[in-house]
Image (cartoon, rainbow, N blue to C red):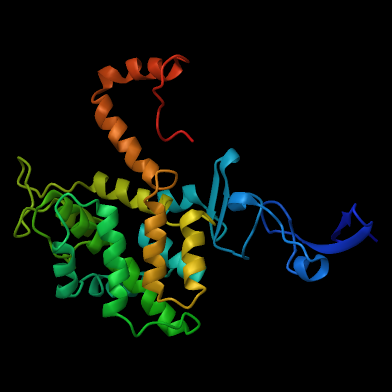
Length: 315
């Protein structure tokens, strides 16, 4: 009978070492090298963790070559077209989609946690108007630890649940405040009568005092198609497996640091141009291209081997 193991041979002395192979539910199998140093006195060298799994997880599976993305075993197309972002959040937290009642309760819990302490608002106000929104967001999320310092034990299910709900509820408020601060315009408080995604758009767009621009028909100018589009974007970005920011969060959290500080470190990693910052470069390039009439010109530039121009966002 074949053993589910792999044998390592040290050609310097002909010693052999045997390690278990762990079969994944999806994706490639892995070699369990937890005992490698004890057995051999050696470490592995894997710059960039390109072939290293640092934990077991049942949350997300990604196969970029096949265009496959699943949360908790559910295909992203199903989640993006048939479920809301809040349903996806619940799924990621609880490993199951919510019932109607569970979703209503979850939604209400987030609405009531969307406000931030006034002193935290003053902290954001102290940043210069030209501060980058990601700098403000990372700092303000870290500062949340000073206002909610009692939630520290992630091994406690109740504390972990409360921390998760607070961070999901408050980050849109902090992000909107950071955006408006970078523009030098007054903050807009959450409107708990609006849905999660609509409220975020409201905090980004509303005039001082909370008034929304109205169309010719007198209807507030947040269109359902915009809400659905942003909700879908939130769903697509809800989790991204063991990427750079996830790794940073897990490393910081493993020291026993406050969860909000760990999340803040992940936001700092996300800011980098080789990670989430690439999205900013895409937006800047779209603004540079300007209009549909200019698209062909820039595609030609991208195809020209003698032109340094590169299209952003294509890996």
